[in-house]
Image (cartoon, rainbow, N blue to C red; front, side):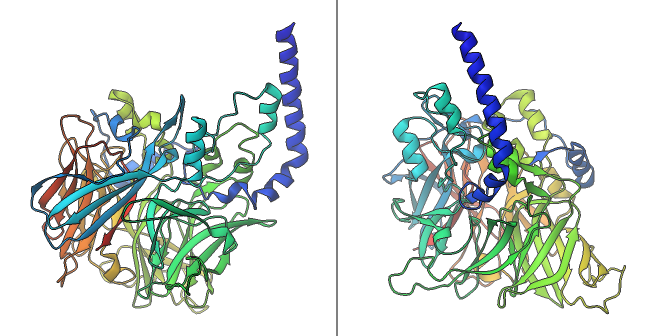
Length: 592
């Protein structure tokens, strides 16, 4: 009898839920403008067409891998090290390097007996490598975000993340748990992606409307900052760009009655007295997506001397699915998908006037996370980025996949597309007199094309920024340049991680003059994003060092901070760390 009653109650709850959704779908979408979709989520592209992976392999010529090493220890929960500890230096770390490498990434993957599903869901763990007089110390702290504090207090997952829905309170009865599905989700403030600097202050950020001010010396959490209290946006990327005068530019979505908007944000370079860091921030312009109910996901954007480039890629966000995720008992990631039939569109925005170019630059379906550089020359805008011809890669980064072994691990990796560096050449002077149906790219030695279809549409194809050698390294991601001197300007070198595994397994230096590479690789070790630090008397573009945190899943070996000569790409020294460090995302060098 009791089972019969429970079954009838469940049937009644399902019936109520269906009626509620039918009546309130429009209300939910409108309400998302204020609350639910405040997360501009890291993407997990749900690929509906497996053919794109095969096409990507055929087009780029990359090969499957077999016998991959298990990297589960790189994505396990770590203990924080709040007080600085010494490292063991081998080789020589140049004495002119004075400052700290600040890194950010996920470091805690469970609370109690509840586990996060996706790599991006892990709680932010901040790292600091202080380099002084040839010696290195290390410390780390978990960001004391509201998400971290609440999860810790209850010893279970209380705040939903990208790939994990928060669990209902086990103390509630069945009907109370049913009603909890109708509660609005609070956006996470788990700022685990990057360190950024606004007006001299350091923040850790993700892609929601929250970031946290932190002390760069001891990594203590200081203040939570909400973008939406200063400007009408529901989030901002973790990859702002900066002009030489310190003006910061960023990008964030907003959601309203008419759907989504892409917004370009500017933040002035200096504080005005004791005002908040984001005081004075403004929206330069708003751009309407091709599909307002399904805007594109973006992790970053491109910027040249005079333009910001919005990359409306083929990775899309279904706002209805995101808004109703809790009702449908689905993760937020369920609403992000790859549309192989949707062309990518580049929108150009004048940084100085906020004017949006009437010309839309189209290209084939593209998935991109990181831009390398962009600059203007001879009436063209060159935009360099790491891109893939399919959008499945991030769908792979479930924690259970990262912890697989043997053939199962090989299968996961080989199902992915790879990102390779490429250049698009965008002609800037399009008028009604521009010739149609012919390649407008007149730059010497460039295989990129730009064909004008009308005064408002140019179709572009890219050129590779590499030769066949890079195919052997599995493509390139986490690109970096000598940013302070060459961002928005013509340049020659960039650096990144090669990806013959689910995480970087090599460091790469690319030379754009000949598209040749230099590489650092040591079997069984996995380097993080390279950070370029120029030497004090730098005259050439590659005068300096590369810093990278190198991890290993083997207990017999140590994690270490690697120092490479940026010119020769040979190891100068390393500082071995005696504690476990999980694989992270991004960071910056804070000069002393």
